[in-house]
Amino acid sequence: MSDIRLRFAPSPTGYLHVGGARTALFNWLLARKLGGTFILRIEDTDVARSTEESVNAILEGMEWLGLDWDEGPFFQSDLFPVYREYVRTLLEQGKAYRCYCSAEELEAKREAALAEGRKPKYDGSCRGLSGEPAGKPFVVRFRAPQEGVTAFDDLVKGPISFNNEELDDLIIQRSDGTPIYNFTVVIDDATMRISTVIRGDDHISNTPRQILLYEALGFPVPRFAHVPMILGSDKSRLSKRHGATSVMAYRDMGYLPEAMINYLVRLGWSHGDDEIFSREELIEKFTVEGIGKSAGVFNPDKLLWLNAHYIKSGDPARLAQLLLPFLLERGVNPADGGPELPPVITTLQERARTMLELADGALFYYRSEVLYDDAAAAKQLTPLQFPLLRAFGEQLATWEEMTPGGIETLFKAFCAAQGIKMGGIGPSVRVALCGVTTSPAIYDVIAVLGRDETLRRLECAVTFIKGKTE
Ligand code: GLU
Image (tube, rainbow, N blue to C red; front, side, top):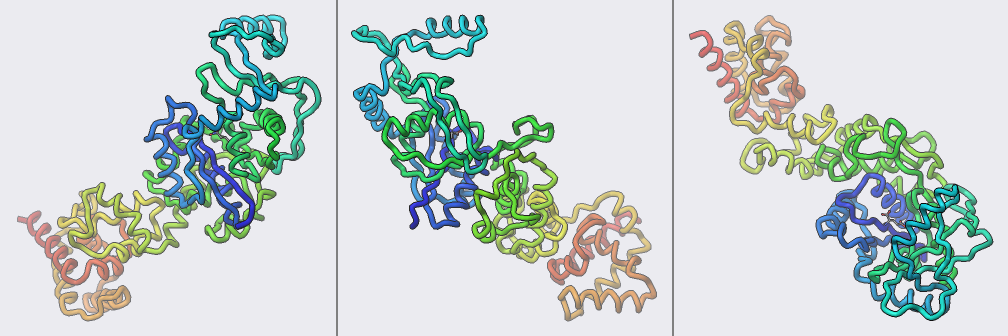
């Protein structure tokens, strides 16, 4: 293993957001490409929001996308004693200090600053405090340098610098003893020896504070790559207003993980004009340099297009596994009878854009009774068709070649013998077998249903017509 170590460090919010998933993907790809280590760390210091369910939602999303981790999941909530120890060290070294200002005092100072048109900033009242008041609650603040510049060379955005003057003496430990994000993230990234931090650019303003903490603690500073946010169609940050933002919601809407991966990677990374990338190609081609500087706009149509592509080109046996839950939800279990699922999928995958469409399209194969669409039945299951359907059934009963090609030959021979065109029999056979006028190619349908089931359905159609005329 190389010493490349990357991490995804989500805070549990109840679901895995597509933006988070993309960050995870970029880290995972780079780790896999460089033979590095990919670490999953759950930033659950906000105990109220960090339910087990919320954590599981992240793990489930990662697993569904196939983003496997080499170390972790580590939980920050397990590491509180470690953070406390580092706070103690900083206090001992005078690099941090206790601040006794109450929330009300701070708020009053903040309002005063705003009223005077100054940028609110902690005024350092407790910086030089000697003889500390016993028993009074306190937070711990980092003694940040007041002058100079903190700079870093972002791998995506280029050189970035902040004047230290603008940075507050950051609170690193709350009055209840719990640590805050900017502190825990530094301890963890340092002790987990993270070499490059790839994360959303909403964290850019945190980075100089974190760099100062690395320096104060004597840790090497990792490299940073800040990835632009994902935007909605109106160019505001992607949120629920724009539609589903949870990765698992896309699974439930019938998207394939490979489509999601391919879509997310292109939303912020490019390799020439290529659009379609297998997982292996991504691992081979991914580079941090390929990450774009500007934000990508989430385009549901493109995701749908990619999904259709992956359904069309997918291995029917694998699609069958993924399709099963959708069929069960619709009350169909292929294990109870009916054709094998993979050949059924082969007849449908050309047209289905989502697994929901695939599932809906597969239903007619498994229903014991064909549900005739009224208009289709009125047009195709008529007394005129009665003798034709019956004659076709008779031919089929002794027909040997039950492949799509063989069935095509049967139709041709039948039409020739009857002196009709394919349009004179095909559509009524289709309605007899599927109930509707749109379906996979009729030769394929018959091959999949098999002779007995096809004959049974033709018989039902003939009985249906008879019923109408009596
Ligand atoms: N836990 C932070 C978040 O979910 C990420 C922190 C980081 O990547 O540094 O936004």
